[in-house]
Each structure stands twice: as C-alpha cells, then as structure tokens.
Image (cartoon, rainbow over all chains, first blue to last red; front, side):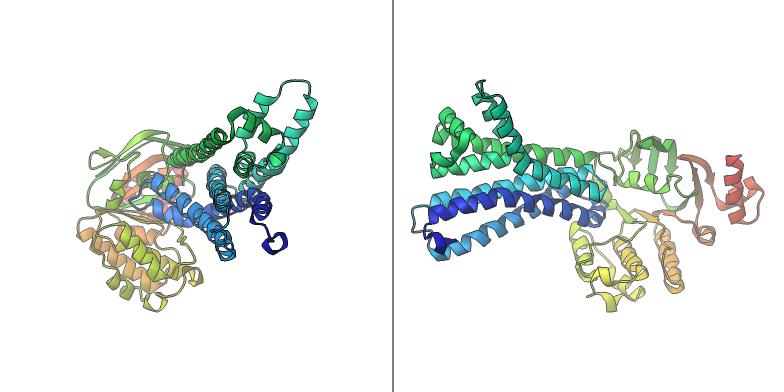
Length: 229
Length: 235
C-alpha cells in the first residue's frame, strides 16, 4: 500500500478505513471468545481469596492491552521501517494508532458485558456480532436515511448527538479532524468541525471515547459482583 | 464455626434454598446429603461466595462473609467438576495457585501420595478425568486451612487413591479442621462422617449422627435410612 501510494498521508487514510471497522470486530470476537473460554479458569479463581472485580477487570485489562499492543506493534513496525518518524505525518499516524487502541478497549469491554449477561455461548456470540454490525455498518445507513428523510429540518444537533452514540463514527471524525481533510469529513464531520472547531472537537471526541470505556467497564464491575457461578 | 441464617436463593423462578438455617460447629466431618438438585452445591457455593444469596446471612467465626473475599484464604475448596484451563501444565497451575495465597504448602508429599509426578509437565487438557481429579485434590489439600469443603470428592478416583483420600480426610480431622463433604456414596458417609445434614428441596430435613439417623428411621442400613427419609418426606 505504501509503495503503491508513495504517500504516507494517503496510506494513513486507507488504513483508517480498515482500522475503524476491523479493530472493533477483532476486539468484539476476541472479547467474547476469551470470556467463554476462560470460564473454568474464572471459577477456579473465584474460590481463591480474590476480589471479584479484581478478577474480571484484570482479565479485561490483560486482553485489551495485548490486543492493543499487537495492533500498535503490527502497524508501527512496518511504518517505522518505512521511515514515518522523519515524515511530517508522524502525528497523524500516531493518532490513528491511538484511536485503534481506544476502539480495542471499547469493544473488548462491550464484548465482556455481553458475555457476562449471557450464559448461552451461541446467544452471546450472536449478540456481540450483531452489535458490531449495528455500530459499524447499519448505524451509518440508518443515520443517512434519517438525514435524507428529515432534510427539511435543522439536523445539526441531532447528527452531533447521534455520532456521540457510536464510537466508530466518533473515531473516524477524530482522525479526519486530525488529518484536516474537510472533503472527506462528510456531513457529521463537517457539522462537528463547525460546531467545535478542530482542536476543541478533538478534545470533546476524546472525552466521549474515554466515557465509552469507563461506562462499560463500570458495568462489568457491577455485573460481576452480582453474578452467580 | 459456620452459621447460616435464613438463607434464600432463587435461580429465576426455581427456589433452590428456602429459609435454610444451619450451624456447623468447629472441628469434625460433616456430610451434606440429598437427592440431585436439592441445593447441596448451591449451599456450598453460597458459603464460598460464588453464589450470591437473595436474602439471609452466612457467618464464619461470627463475621458475616457476604461481599467479602479475604475469608476465602481460610477455605480449601474442591469443586465438583475438575475444570481447569487446558493450556497450562500441572506444574504451572500449582505454582499459580500457590502465588495467590501467601501460605506454606505441602504439595510435594501430595504429589508423591497420588503419584502425579509423571504428569507434572503435561498439559491439563491431555489428562484423564481421574488424574484431573487428583490434581484437583492436590490443589485443595496443599494449603493448611481451617475449613475444607469437598464437593463430590470421590468422582473418578481409583480405589487406591480413594483410600489415600480417606486417610487425608481423617488426618485433617485429627488436626481439628472443619470438613464439609457432599457425596452420594453411602459407605463413604458411614465410614467418615461425624454428622449428617440431609437437605431436601432447599430445606434441612435431618441433622445428626449416623447413629441418630438409624434410630430415627428404624433402619439398620444407612442407604435404606436415607431412602426412608426421602420416601417419608415425599408422601
């Protein structure tokens, strides 16, 4: 890809499209699979003098960190070899990796939530995949259709709020704001930029992404405290 | 001493434990008997904090254990089904559990006793059911704790290991430990237990020694005595 484009900035954009869709999928599937697979292990640990939240949050952090690390190393090393450090887009590239890490943490926590609430493996897997499909694909479609249907109304606020509710949209906007390519921003992105401006927009979207981690993790902890094994 | 007060637990619409009261004094072997699905394992898991009761209280040595975890340092638990993470070796598993509790262990003699040493570097998923149960027993007995809870300890064991197990249980009893056992093997009950707790439909129907059970039911054979209890309560 790098050799075809011969332009790191363009490569970052292409990669963004891959990362924004694929890291959530990988995080979701690994999260659900890991939880169900380590169930026996969890039961073994539960009989030991350990706090429940320690066990589950520990498992979550362990999995999310290793997935993030594989993303950062897997993408980082080839780009380092190519010489991204000397190029001007190093910060764009870094923000891409950062968003990838955020998405991994978000979707692993969502997957853990789903797995904790469903003892039936097949059901848990189904819901997890459906959640990914909804956020990655269907959400955008519904969003676009609703924008077209209600074209006559002022939709700025609605679309702003709507993209807050989808971490994938939010990450995409974040990267595009960073890259400063207004042509690719799309409707929501443009509204976002207009509303917040580039730097404030980035801070706000980062805060919302952090919230997207904190809330599910908090639910993991509270759910784990009440569950029977 | 374990004191259970008015313990209730539902799984959905099914009431597993109903207003269960039980006091287990310190020292001795207590067998918990009851038909399948009577709530034995649920009761044990409630003591361990793995099942969270709907209402009621459990106290160990006068302190409520609900929502706490440190007390588990004083409990050795043998789960009913030996489910271990398959990708670990026996050695790694034992070392890992050892690091979780800062207590002296005696796993070496247990490994010798159950003749597990040839399997120490094998992965757990490659072990047979009986060998897994032996690993399970080693993990349970390697710590020196006041309370020992065994859920179906005999399943899958060969006769030699069964004799070893009985010996270990007797030894622990002589050290003044409180031992809770659930089992369906009546000869095991008759041989070991100081007191029988009979649970049916989440309630305690009988608590007393083997002798008392025989007198109350007017049966000489413990198997018949238990069957008598079951039939009488079902009519």
